[in-house]
Image (tube, rainbow, N blue to C red):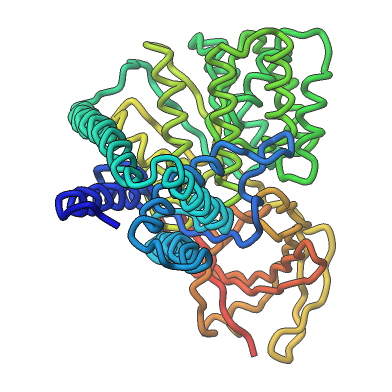
Length: 502
């Protein structure tokens, strides 16, 4: 097989280089700092399901990459194990790819996808066939030809590695010494989504900043392209764009009359408002796709708007494919910094869910610092945050039911339901009851690990109350949970705790 020992050593050496690069690419994503890998654990067992773009077609780029990186694997297997059967040569490609996916899932350093295994295995098959063709053409010189090709490729990759290491070193230095480029102030307000009196308070705050302090930039918990559509709508003479946005929001907590009226009041009384969307790409297959088409029809394909829209869409696809809340929180921080630092010395107001606005809080899964906490570390005293959840009124129940708990019946004040579609996967809505005069009976019941902050309730919460919440799933099933308010704090905010019943 090998002409001499030197050729064998060279071939083995080049294979080791290839194996190193393969591991660095697939497991470490060309990162030089393991902390940059993030925390991703997701598995997809449906071929090509995670490779769908907004127009419903299969995204070929990632699949092609997965094929290409395993072609050398097939070539080397054919060199080292030329006497193996075709099936025997394929099995190592399949096995190595499967091993990579298992490692990514086990250590939460990437998404495990059967599409990757299919692409990798197909690449190995191509490599096996390619070496057969090379051997037929070059005969005894086949290994030499492969080694020359591999050597040239390895040199090029080594150059790229040096550049990557150099760039990463510079980035680390820049990151460690970086400082905000904007000198403006940031005023964040945390909300419970869709609550009318909170929206009224938010408008009063924005109107004050707009009229008396000259602010024009309002940051919102929408994707980049939704905010850009709102900016177009601000300049239009009709409500067509706004109607389309809220049509896309059907089935989500944002699709309320009060929320739509909030934006209409801004257009009427604060007409120079400029919206900045810093969330990942929600509604990427409707609002996002439509904004791409708008830019294509207006010859804006080469614009920054187009690039940022595609980036937001990619973020949305990634988030929804993997339900990765850590990824979303970090992207919200990056997107916020990008938008704010463009403004130089402009001050802004931002409206986000309270889970994102605590200056000392973790995100709601308690994995990483929340958006405002991370921004505080970056902007320091330039950022202020206030929760508007405390202005939730002590609303009256719409009816009084009777609920039996542990064999005893209680009056149960009903406070309505909240839409959960588009917020929590698999959930349709939840309904709220407060059990009257039940705290003394249930205050010592064992607690679970489930927390539900006060800002998740539509009514005012006082210490010493018991709540029943029915979660209706998208399949029609109902899960009933019981919570009590003991004055307990979780993650820097008042929270009810779930308890068990007999």
